[in-house]
Image 1 (tube, rainbow, N blue to C red):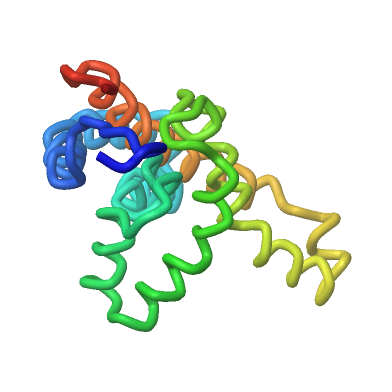
Image 2 (spheres, rainbow, N blue to C red):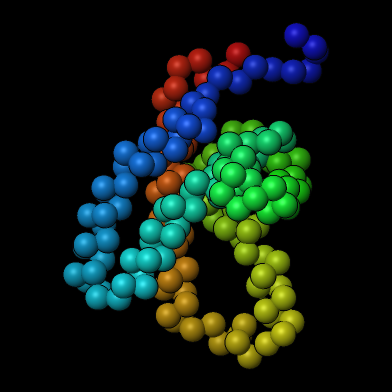
Length: 170
């Protein structure tokens, strides 16, 4: 093996995908509870959107090669969008080492990826409409929180699977 390279054994993207599907009934139960507390179907949609976007916005975006999530974006949305997605996440992968606590730390890594993902959009919105940006509504914050909760749960499943997997690093 060339010097400087290391072999990393971990669950593959398909395993992470199956685990997200396996745990989706928990999100379904959570959705029912959320509707009982706050009968707002958009909140439930935001929760599910976050959970399902774990298919694309996942901890392994810190890998500096084409990841399973980048491949899924290409398969689901076409070559050009997949290429853009890979280029967009390239700086993230270059800056954050694989399985670092910034990419694989429960909850904090989700916040970091969400900020990275939304920063360009929020920057443009802030330039176009200062009043909207400064008067960010309670409802929008509520939906963003539900999205975060869903994504954080998908991330947690991924992170736990990585830590439980035998042959963590060699």
